[in-house]
Length: 317
Length: 249
Image (cartoon, rainbow over all chains, first blue to last red; front, side, top):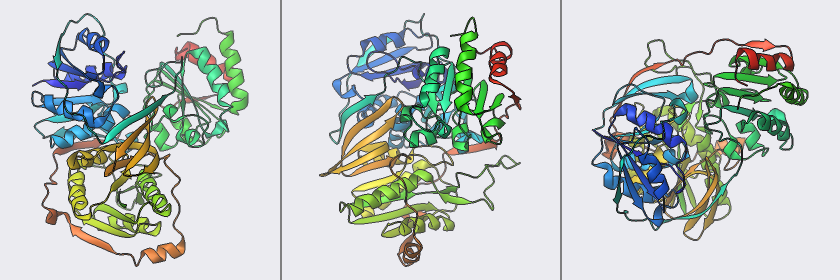
C-alpha cells in the first residue's frame, strides 16, 4: 500500500497547500510518493525531496505540463496509478478540477474534501456547506481523495532526502489549449494560509471603500477576503471570495466587516480560531459565530480600529 | 449546436440544515427543495447561447426520484426545449451519475454538456469532470465566462490564483460558476407553456450501468458548535480583547 500525492506548483515553487496535503496523505500511509508534473520544475522536485514525510519523488518534465491542463495531467497520473492504493491532492481549484477525471478512469468513487483521516479507508468530510459532517468509508480498491488543506497542518519542509526518479511524459490532449492566466499579484499573505484575514461584504457599498479594509490588512499583515455578495457586486476580484463555493480559511483571527453571515459564507470561515464581526445590524447571523461582536457602522469603526492599532506598541506578525 | 444541461434537485440554499438524530443523514421531509444554484447558471447560459443563434436545441436532464422532475420543468420554463428524467430511487454517487449521463450523451449526441460546478448538498464537485473523462471529452470547469467560437469554446475559469482562460474543442463539458450569468425568472406564460413541453422518463435500471454505491455513509453528525461569544461596546474594547484576551494581534 502506497500513496501517490499530486504536487501543485508553479514550476518554480511548491504551492503551499501541497505541504498540508502531504500531512494528510502520510496519515493515510507512510509510504508516500509525490508526483511532480511540470516544465523545468527541477527546483520543485528538489524541494519536495527534502520533505521528511516524502519517501520518493517522481518527476516528469515536459512542456505539456507547464499549466494545469487536467487532460494532460490525467494521462500521466493514470500511467503511475497501478502502483498505488491511494491517489490524493488538495481540494482547491487545482485538485477539484483534476481528481474526478482520474477517479472516473479508474472507476473509483472519489471522496472529496476530507477534513480528517480516520483510517486508510474511512474519512470525515463536511457536507451541506459544513452544516453536517459525514463519516464515509470507501469500498473501492483504489481510492481517490482530495484533502481540505486548511484542516491539516503543513508538513515540515526540510531534513529529508527522498530519491528523485525521472519518468516519461504521457500523451498530450489536442482538444484543450491554455490561453492565459490572470494572476492577481499581491505582497500580502495568501488568503488560504494567512494568520489573519479581514473580509468585507455588501456593507462595504463599493470597491473604493475596501481601502478601509486594506489599510488594516497592511497594519496586521493580513490577507483580504470577501463575501460572495461583495464579489458578485464587483467590489473585489473572485480570488478573494470566502465561502462554500470560494475558499475555506482557518486563520487565527478572522474579521468580518459588513458581512451578514449567510450559510454559504459561514461555510468558508467558521472554523477560524477567533472570529470578529463588525456589523450595524445587531441581528445579523454573523454574530452567532463571532467571539467578539461589535455592533457599529463600519465607516466609523474601521478608521477607529486602525487608530487603536496604531496606538499599540507591538503587533504580532 | 445542441446543448444538454444537467440539473439536480437539492435542499434549498436558504434552508437551515438539520441532522437526523439517528445519524443516518439530514432531514429532508417537509423541507423546501430547489434547483442546485449553479445549475440555474448552466441553464441560463445555454438559453443565452440559443438566443444568440448559436444553438438549436437545449435538452434538460435530471436524475432522481419522481419529484426531481420539478427541476426539469423549471428549466423548460426558462427556455429548455425538452426534458429527460432518469428515475432512481436512492441517492447515487457522482460516478454513477456520470455513467448515466454518458449513456444519455451517446443517445442524444449533444455538442456541449453544461452543469453546475458543484451540488450544494454533497459538495462533491465531481460529476462534470467524471463525465468528461468517461467520454474522453475536454473539460472546462468553474466557468465564469464562455465565448462560443467555430467548433470551440473559449472559457474563463475561476481558479484560486485568479482567472484562467482555456480553449476547448467541441464536444466539451463545461461546469458553471455562480458568476457566469444572472439566471432569469420564469414568466407565468412560460411556466404554462413549459407544462406542454415533453419530459421523457427513463428508468436508470434500463440503462445497463452499475450505479451501486461504492462509499458507505457510516454516520452524519452535527459539526462541533462554537462557544457563544460576547458583544463589545467599543472599538477600543475590541482591540484590547484581541490583544490581551485572545492574544491574536
